[in-house]
Amino acid sequence: MKRCLNEQTLLQLAAGDGTAGQRQHLRLCADCAERYDSLAEDLDTLRHILTAPPPPRPATYANPFRVRWIPVAAAAAALLAVLVSGPRLRQPAPAPTHYAAPGASVAAFAADVSAALFADSAPTATVALATGDASYLQAALDAGPCTRDRYFNGECDDQLSALLFEGE
Image (cartoon, rainbow, N blue to C red; front, side, top):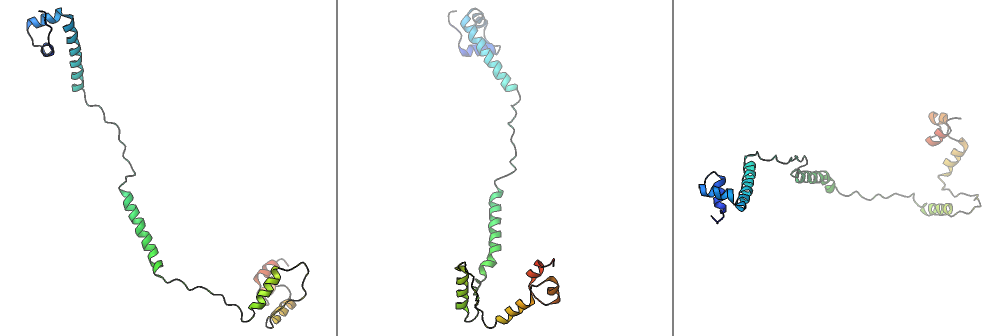
């Protein structure tokens, strides 16, 4: 028998089938024996793979920060912003505040401010006062500093001076 066995015949021999002549050729032919041994190893590998339990699944970790809540949180934040700013948007803008200056003394006040800002080193001896303010100034100069006792007796109303002269 000069013909080597084909793959189908080798598979039948591995399964336990085949004729006596095919088994004898397998024992005598080195090429067929080598192919048969390779086939037997492959079949053993397949048998092992098919009978073994499946490999363990890779560990999957639950993601605590699911993406599903992000749109809900964004919508809630937008709703909260609308609810908070809504009443403010409906209110009319406050009228601009104008500070009233005393009657005709604006020019005198501007001159005093200008003189104070751009004064030279020489002291000035005169101070321009409105006629109504002179009596308050004279009373303050005659009374002296406002001390704590004078403040609590009602003689003066300068709280800052009362605190500064507290130790006297």
